[in-house]
Length: 407
Image (tube, rainbow, N blue to C red; front, side):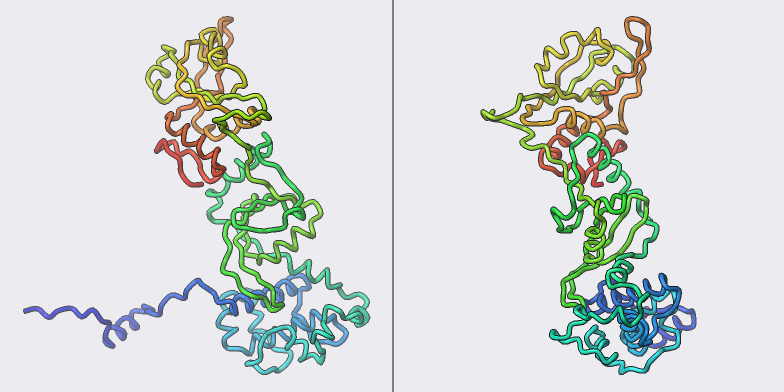
């Protein structure tokens, strides 16, 4: 009887795998603790100082208090085995390998109060560092606290590897702004930041696509790590409070609102309703070969403030209607709506499947109707429902499957 295979890895197995260069150590979890986030955030401040100044921070009395704080913090990070384990994979500048400036107790906490105490500065509530008035006198040409903070707000950006997933969203947002279904408001009028929010910062569109677990910073304030995508195909993993500071500093920063159509579909007319209108969906009776072959999925999508039957009464004389009679296959009643903006939104959503067909009008002039699309009626109905519940920006039309897909 053959020997059964053990489900456990033996010492012989480990020895053999070691000779083959196979590492069985478990992959580290991507989840970071609040303490690890604080360690990384403090190290990033030092990295930004080095990038801006071109040198390591120095604990020199003539230098400003923040540079001296960075110098002490860097020494603590170098001498702490726990900190080095967290930071060495991220230390592209090899700051941890540089020669230390001071010798400090590795086990000490890495909060700024302790670091300042190492500099001989009392940072208790009665002597808070934020209230120091003599710091600039140490060096007249040193940077101000606001300048230091501005440097800290600059996050390292990198190319966004999956930008193809986000580009259609940015494109749709731009179209929404152009047709008025989205607006921009001053960021300061609504300073909250949530996942999915869109902003204009330094002239660029910015989208918050992910928010990490919250943690408490060294200053005792709640914070979290973000994944932020920019419309120039870059991304950043800056902190929430860094983004908020940048938005506040930019005097022309804007929040991009979500589409707002008001009471889009009205079943009961109210006394203060604006004149009602209709979304209408038409099917052509044209005998053109292309239309005849795909008649069931070729539809005209439009919005009107008048009677749909009257609008299509002379369809066979109008190139807009493919110079043929049409069948009204669906209508949706509207109230209090920007009809032009809604029509543009619907047609932009299906722009990738716009019917490419050229006809000659009664004067022999070639025309290309722009409001016909190769899309099933049920998908049009689904899109109208998504507009109604305010989730349309989360979807796109997938021509290969003739269905909606998440953006």
